[in-house]
Length: 76
Image 1: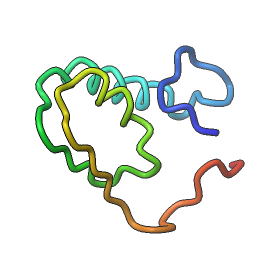
Image 2 (image 1 turned 30 degrees about the vertical axis):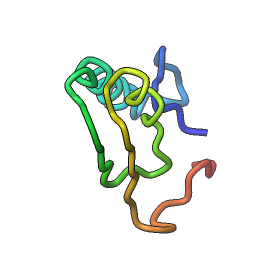
Image 3 (image 1 turned 90 degrees about the vertical axis):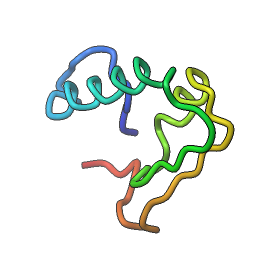
Image 4 (image 1 turned 120 degrees about the horizontal axis):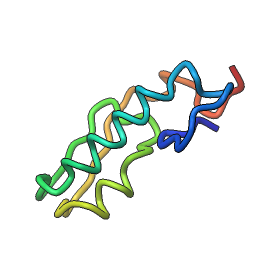
């Protein structure tokens, strides 16, 4: 399973650690500015949904992505 909030770099996530960590930190830091309805375009499996809801004033969260565009939880 892909870790969308990696806490430490290891051999399994070295290629994406800083990207995922940066996205997560940006969302948590700026979630306080989010209010009302949120449309998450390109959300995949919505890995950040709960963190955004818990740290914002979002009343409705809607995810939008292409059905079956990627296979998640697949070994690389």
